[in-house]
Length: 233
Picture 1 (cartoon, rainbow, N blue to C red):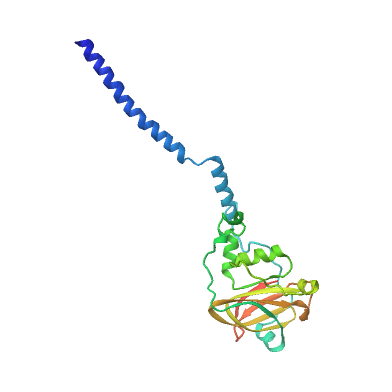
Picture 2 (picture 1 turned 45 degrees about the vertical axis):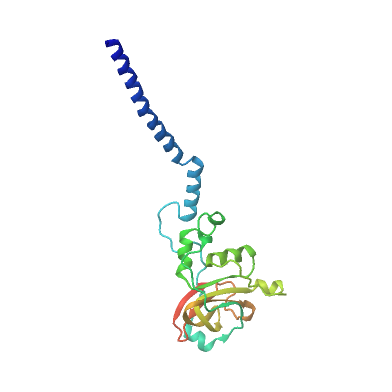
């Protein structure tokens, strides 16, 4: 009788232990499945590098900017004594609404090319932007950073000399009325709007620069001459 009871106890314990062991195996297997692989870790680190600087630090600008021109007049003086510049308008959309975020700014889009947070904040601070018409890669990055994908600002049949001297200017949430220049300053007179975007091109050959080697200061101002924004070209 004792022998039979002993066998029953051994069999019961073995059965219970078997039941307890199997769930542990399942939990271990599930945990292994959710653990990120080394490849996933590397991908997340790569995306993080595209989003922020490697160390915590203060940043005034995500890239080096040229210094202001040595001679800078008041905007009112430029408006009164300067002369008007001719310009083309390849883009004029008064109903355009500025997006808070665009898909191409995500860290997984095009390898995170436009995802860098200091760059995103820099562009968000401004409503006036300038760049050269030369260089397809330059124009591509410029418009992607502004949230546009398919914009053609080139003039058909333009000579290489004209393209080299062409400056692309993008103005957001303002309606341009006139463009005035004096020396190394360009004052864009516009009325602030809640919506709208305009892209214009200006040719430097139409300007009388004080110094060809210095930067050009572009200023977006109200009709009264109050500065809204500026860009150094």
